Image (cartoon, rainbow, N blue to C red; front, top):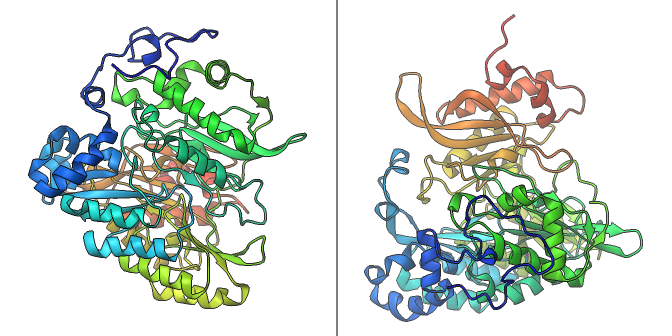
Length: 570
């Protein structure tokens, strides 16, 4: 039975909504596991698998791994088996997970908003070249993601990463996933408040802590004190967003219950003011509610957003204050939203007179050689290091004013750019069928080819248009909140053949007017026809827009024929 010593057996002062049927909520007494995932976590705390990896599996090899560890508890160590080659997208939903397993692993390294100095960047690069066939994608959760990792190599990888302060612990699993932090925390001239110390404190308290290692499902955290809301706070389970109280000064608003996937929901803004030194307490309270009252019966409902949808934000705040924080939160209007979220690409002056340089790979795909070279550049120019962003990009911090042009030129030489086209700057893609067992279509390479083609067709685009490419409905690349969101699926081509393609979402946005993208009824695009489809829609927008009209705004009023990429009949 779960250890409830540190959890409320039942709320003492607050009426708790009870669902019509048991949903596996611990604090309401439903502690018996209701699915295989919950049973596995009850059988053994997933944190314990680290020792088995170090002392058994890495020595005896892949075939020695207990299936419950392989397809469950390994995730708490940042490890998933990757997709075996030879299975097309049609097999994804037809085969059992073990049939799709390769004998190699994807590994995620969390950075949690930290600055990666030269040694850290080189360590990330050296791990990639030595143990991961030179793979090293930047994800949209501030991770570095490797592929082709063998179980025998894991102890050596951990040793090298931990030597520079990095870890894979709880980078996956039903745990506090890697935190999104502002890449310009502590350095931006227009920053409201630097939340770095709060993220560090949350990490100190919870990483590897059994009180938070068994959550109903993944739990995503974001924190920013920058007015551009540069961590996608609307779509995280818990977000702390910089705000100013008229009497108390800078602090954070609390947003809860955001998330995408197959049931997308935007976060509820509580409209409060939390001082910097109380952020970690509030995080523990929100995570504690999720742990104790989250729905554990069905995996499809085991996210905080479903609890918020049922309770409402007023009840959630009441429980948080009365049963977890034991104090009232200070009311304060939620901060004004930016027109669009910041990505910090380009060259910008810091508050100390130095500069930060935001650089873009193509759809997050880089490699170990690039990371090592970046580490060398950071040290050559005396920069502090680099942070990863929520948009599969990176920001180098602390470049001297007189060195910015030369530094940007040297970035180009290693395959990065601080002067990207709109398409390179504003396109993201998830891992896709190349490595992911859930994916249906190719994403990374298809998105790279799309970027290349759109740069030729629209070389001088004068406005940002985002394109997010996802290999399945799970929305790891935030399909629903892009200008053009592409959700991978199998579709029929003109010859009646089943081929890779996409369902299209148009006009999604975060920021000032957050909205889920518009889905066109019965409209699908083949992967082969994607370049021409995007060209047609963008061309229609450019010819039909009013002055200053954003793509997402245009989508709300555009003729559906234009959105389908078809010419309007006269």
